[in-house]
Image (cartoon, rainbow, N blue to C red; front, side, top):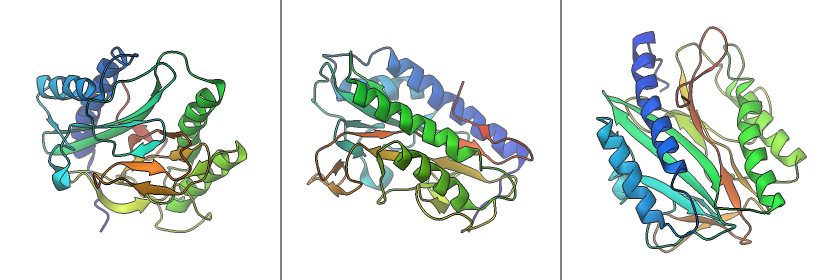
Length: 248
């Protein structure tokens, strides 16, 4: 069931979203060669808690950390640990915060030092595909209009869209209906209504879209070992343009 949010609920979700955005800003200052993903996780948790929120991911279905930190060929759900970031890596960081009863959720892929032109393109196409998708995040469009726009843009730029993981509704629960694939035909799924709040999150691979899960039960990697990027914001459907809740 899709839960429609009131304007006051959306305002609370915006407050949660601002905490997520501030956490990304804090992390960005520390992403450089030599830092470990565990150190980034500690910075994120400290930031979230200082802002009187709770990390959404820690303990969720047993997940052991406050952020997901996915490096290079890791797609999503990378568990922070002793991995040291190196010059030329890319890292996707997914942050969630729970505040006053509601979640915010956003992910970005960051360069570590100087990266290749191909990796720059992967990150930029992933980011831009989100904005192509939300052109259709308006009342009257159908859910898959967003999906189709994302897939079309990504594939036109020579990359592939991950099939195994999708965006989702969000609110008092981190994952609510509906599921939002980043691929598919136009004109399918529910019609978008004012008050829907969605986490739209293209995950884009440089090679094949096929992924596999590592033995830790969480970390998803590309089957072909090529790099992957991730871009996500929590948005609200309004009577006009979509409202991005997780940007400053």
